[in-house]
Length: 155
Image (cartoon, rainbow, N blue to C red; front, side, top):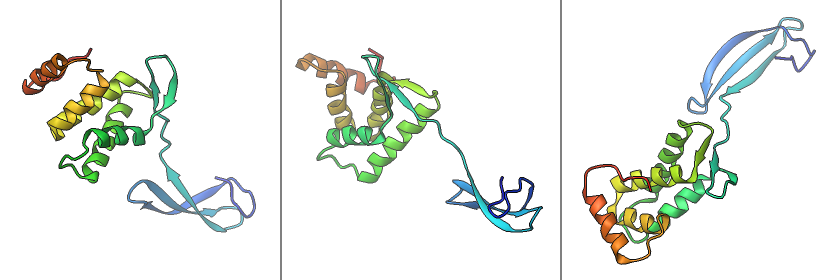
């Protein structure tokens, strides 16, 4: 770390503490050349999560889009905004574990998995748009899948 006063590169860490609820580390440093003290912050650098769409386009992951889609599916359902935000956060965290690039299908399936546990009506609404239901038989098939205890199949 370069000293802001003299530009020296040699320093020692005097004190380290967690900051921002554990999201970063605050370090007090002392320059070995001029003895000036200064503060630095160390944070984990998160790589951007990229969604590969069906068309092949690559777009940055937007948790707001997930929250908006789930909010529309959960309209007039007994689901709180906190639950919807938690769902969007869980989806993002699970997708980050898969790597820096995920397919849009992976995003949709991750949302469906969590909606299935949260509210089955919202699950059906989201599935009808995500899977592009054309007729009532699609709903009947999805209800049959929903009543089973197994994970939904990929299309």
